[in-house]
Image (cartoon, rainbow, N blue to C red; front, side):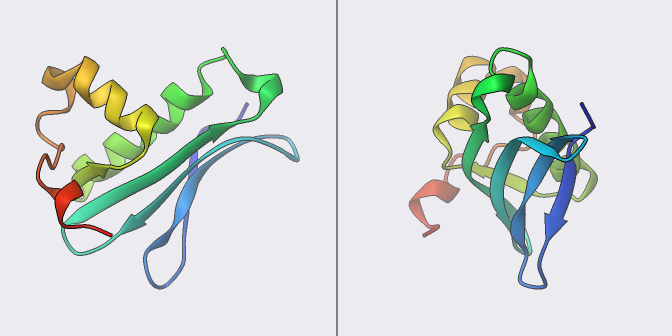
Length: 103
């Protein structure tokens, strides 16, 4: 399994992708703007479930947010659940008001 790779278009829309050779094992769909990283959806292929793929995507996304001084708006249920479950781990990047203002 490869490390997550970020793919963004010129408008800041894209995803973190985890591949295994030619097969996509997971993706975290997001958008990056001036101050926020908005996470919409995380999906892991059935054959990769339970192997830590979602956690790898989460870790890569949070590291990217920290490196780029972005706040995360966790619209994705998985990311939101992890932020709520471990608030001390994500307090520095969690935009707790962004979900009310982002479409």
